Image 1 (cartoon, rainbow, N blue to C red):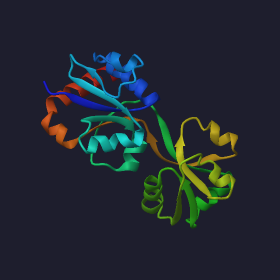
Image 2 (tube, one colour):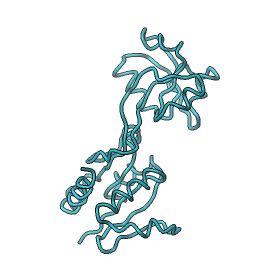
Image 3 (cartoon, rainbow, N blue to C red):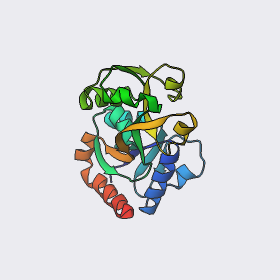
Image 4 (cartoon, helix red, strand yellow):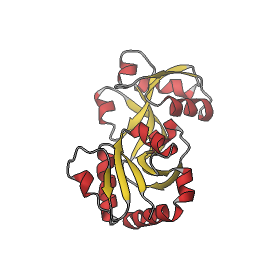
Length: 211
């Protein structure tokens, strides 16, 4: 039986994914026991797991280092890797939004050229250029993008919104919603052909738990 390698996003997504895999009958005890190993195995089911940062998961999958990956749909959209998205896992739900002070709302209505701070330049550019037909200057940030409008670096931001509490604390609002997000499973295209039966079995077992 062929071994399947699964790349999991570190943090809350990994915790929820491991519970899902456990409920589907897979042995995730090695990765749950606090070991400092980098590769974990379920020998009976011929599965290998490893943890990676979210943006790296689609890269591992595209290049075949992992057959399967689990990460947020924001990462999949932003990284734009050659992978198959096969399953919405239904957790990690949030939204990608345009946010800013209420006074900036009119800038979005009249298609004025504005500055947009974001960790997601590809998503922001696609939204403003192709959906809104609005010219923007995209400013890529790695830290707290909420600072952008507060210190006049940008007019608005594009970022993930879960509860909106951080926005409100800083005098910002959701001005437009771009797309809903959640955790997704992606598969390497070659693996989907070469290990089709094994991958489809895993997908079916997880889908049965989700249902």
